[in-house]
Length: 460
Ligand SMILES: Cc1cc2nc3c(=O)[nH]c(=O)nc-3n(C[C@H](O)[C@H](O)[C@H](O)COP(=O)(O)OP(=O)(O)OC[C@H]3O[C@@H](n4cnc5c(N)ncnc54)[C@H](O)[C@@H]3O)c2cc1C
Image 1 (cartoon, rainbow, N blue to C red):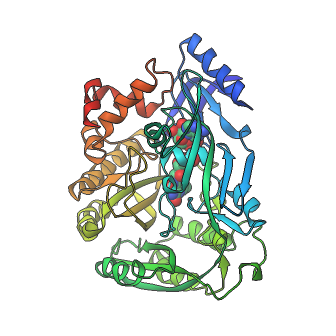
Image 2: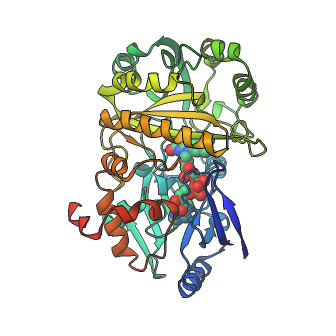
Image 3: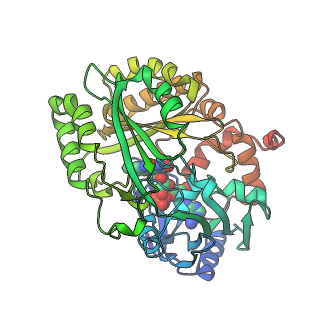
């Protein structure tokens, strides 16, 4: 145990007076909950600690570092599922599954996040066949605030299951999860197309969503000064049934593109010319028709975005926009981004299918996710400016009937949160029911829950 402060991945939210505990089994998790309860301190779980919204932080909290919960409990290759402890990191699971000819059904493209952290924010990747992570979770084993352990799935303890998916760690400590696996089949890039943004929704409707062999897709905007978000390239990977998966070597080490991403990242931070040629240069580079396994498709190297030694931070913000409002959001957001208050390093667009497995879902409808990655100077004036920009962008998203991702900067006003997540009042009310003493608490809960009184549970 150590008493200290911790800062989040965006180097912004600091929690003071925390005690970090790394339990190795369920008895130690329970003991930590009981000790914290007696001491009147909140508890919150931390997976890989990569979220940016103070989600695994609270002043004075006991933080459960789940990294020792790293056992792959069972893999059933015939039935295609894996049971893993919540602290397992995706890259480790991917490597293990390679030997079975299998891959995870849904995860982020970076492999450094934990299964528990990904379940708790209901992550999504660039795969469009399965959709969000919640859809690939068969069951979970959770320790509630009172120390009891329950199994939950879509039939048993179904409400709890749905609350824990995307539940930000507020309903219990996820101990284990059973995940859907798929065959680690071969994919090829179908091509890279550069187009005006106006053409993109039509392209997706015509060439992506109608082709069942396309399992991975994303688009990347032009970020050149003066041309921001005007053009984009799109890229699709289709399943190549002709090639046997064992024709390729087993996945090891970082993705092949890591060196290229490093160079691009370094240059676009420094040179306007690099930002100008990035779209075309990268589209050409990505046009790599070599076959790859599912586990290696659109995999990204964390080292490219890990800037722990920099005086600045890279922040993310993400907006989910109904598919038919894509251009409305672009048109509303462009003038705000063109003011130049934030230095955008990247914007990708992903396809999100409607999914309501998670109680507090961001995927209330078929959407496009706009993932904005930008460089942030950490002085207070710059942070205030950025927060203002992010709130205005959120207004644009809300005007289009959209939502935003809860694992990044916590800048939304309570009214904006309520508009993005109409079930937030019911979510907090359920939280109070499952954890009446408020043991499992993070900064998100402390900031927003007081704005949503108890009686709103009837809204569920
Ligand atoms: C550079 C970058 C790229 C990203 N790309 C993507 C992306 O492509 N797609 C995407 O969806 N997201 C993406 N994210 C967001 C990322 O998926 C989330 O932040 C995710 O929560 C990180 O997992 P983690 O293990 O680090 O979770 P943590 O940050 O450790 O925790 C996140 C939340 O989960 C809770 N939690 C963690 N473990 C448990 C547990 N065992 N039981 C209960 N609660 C738990 C925590 O309390 C906290 O509320 C990205 C983030 C960064 C910084």
